[in-house]
Image 1: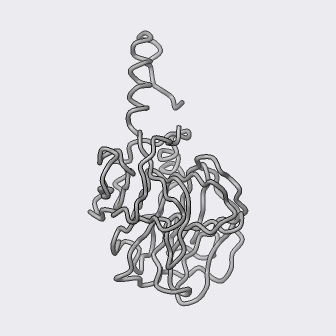
Image 2: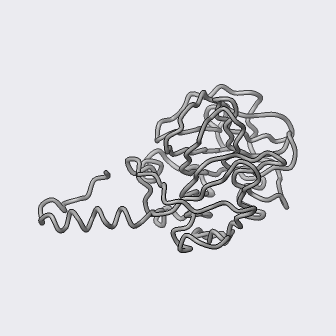
Length: 245
């Protein structure tokens, strides 16, 4: 459990109240079946020819041997942005007129936090593209040269758990997009010791809470960020009370 400030000094009722507030903040995730379920956010323009962005989210895979795209903005094999698990490897792809990505071995089937940070103002693959799992920076193996800007994907939808005709099974929660390369301190705030927390102070462009601000029902995930890019749940993803804690 995250640090609760000085609540221990004011009696057990304050401890209970603090724990209750943490528990009630995040009560829902969304479960995608891997057959045809996905979420469509429309054309999230933050990605289009961006010089910097950060994407973060909590995921829980039933296995890591199948193909599953945590998120994807896809035009074709040479022009796309995605985070995907394939055969026990996690890929962080920013292909801009070629095939460029970083990869790391991955077999985690527990809830984990994944972050992808891109900063085109820097030189070198490992500076332009960084990946974090549970707030630990990963040593990526790179293919190709990560470009100084992302591909122009205007008109292409940002989707969760779908790229082209490929779908993925997983639970996901608290997805967020920022129009800058976040600092390690800001990532630590998001990770919050392993429990999702309020991201308002970090000014996300997109923040999809996967049911918590929508009552855990319906087919719309209301974007709590500044972009207004609501996600539409398609082909029957279900809400779950299995959440990261």
